[in-house]
Image (tube, rainbow, N blue to C red; front, side, top):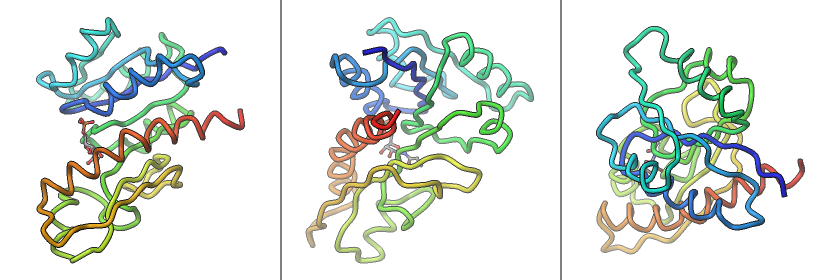
Length: 187
Ligand code: GAR
């Protein structure tokens, strides 16, 4: 199988990144992680780039030309898919157009509910009976692109924010690889 090249964008812990790196080693998984991009020099997840000898690029989103810089790297590694795995910056319309290929994001709620930040506290405040995660295509509107995969669990009365977070992230490790497989199934 000829695997497609993927770039993963992170800002923090990188546990989804780590999971994708592991899954990508399976012989029939359709992609390999060729590049990691972080906007945060202190992102814990950068350790997975180092441990696995995957090239990484740090970007400063305050600089005018940062999108051009990423784009050059994406071309260099022949990247055909970007996975946003806990990347906490908004991807601009310009960049979506410049890249011209698919970008997918993982979000810790059952979209279209709870777009944006602080999802877990809002899930509790809203007395939801279910919550979960969504993998979707990125378009110019925040957390609004076509849904590729979604997984949910039922909330217990005693669940606190951190319980919801743990349960959500457990499902993310299933949903993200599943969404990537789906994207390449018909190609
Ligand atoms: C994940 O739970 C992901 O859904 C969330 O950040 C976490 C990153 O965890 N993403 C967002 O909130 C995007 N709006 P990780 O760095 O351990 O993969």
